[in-house]
Image (tube, rainbow, N blue to C red; front, side, top):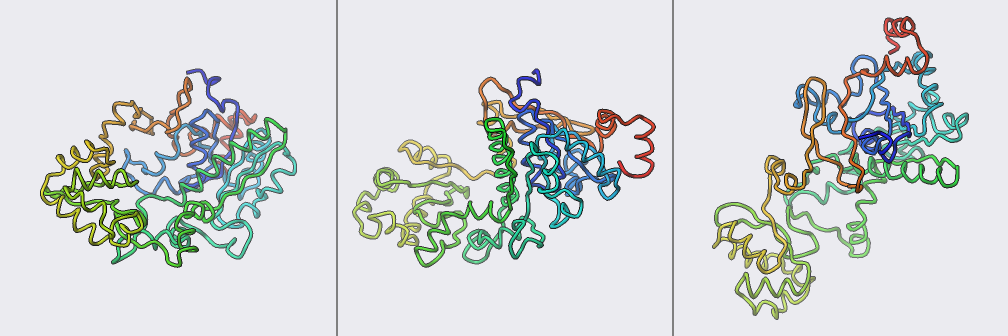
Length: 396
């Protein structure tokens, strides 16, 4: 596919990124055809490269987050490294960084400084708690933010809390950074003005906590921890079938509740039972309702239960593990897997979820540390001898 057909072809992004949030934002820009130059530390590079070694010796996090990028190694504590970075920024459209608190300012890479000589540059800062306020200088990791937003208090069972199984705060921040950058690029194209973007992990996940926040503020208590049961809808959760497998189903309205009672539970009289007359009544009498549903599940195998529920229009599904998800028939039938290169091999990667008709996603290889350093420096006019000297001094 010609690069001119990519939606963000011609957009250059320079990113001082590490871990998850910023790399997730820039990978999505790369998926759309932006040129993303990932600036890494000489030697080890982004520390997320070493989170694990499960994918042909590479980190599963890094492989997921860094396809279609160019890797440039720079020591930014060396003036020569900063000079190279500044040259790159002079020709960039977007500058993304999620450095530790205060680090960008110490390097002269804060928003005010980098835009002072580049009014058309769009800087994006991703922080933990915001660049101002009482926690601006604190480090933030995903689970810390899950704890501080109250998410962990909602996740788990009555017996104990649990973290979510994915880096949800990082992902939320990466998504808002991505959408913020796209908005800033559009605004610049329309008005000529470049607006800086700032996202914090805390405020990104705080937005996702909207429903339990309203429920708690106006209801006086927060939603309970109920494992796979829904905190404010019943019945909605997993139940064990006679073969020991779990099936999840959800009742969303009174029509579905009546169908469940009459055609699955075989108890049409429950529709008029005052314990279950409304959605709120069913939540209030969840234990009694669950006992009725569990007794019905205990009589039948999971495959038959799924068929019965589907036949009466009740949303339902088995509970997959990750291996079953990888083999999901929907992903296979819709052609969602494609091959992406990694150093020394290839992997199966999912296509981006937003399909743009007639514009296939860019799915180029994951770079090795510093793989593109020589080529990028040559673009900036450095000779082979100068590049060799920079390498010898550990600047690149």
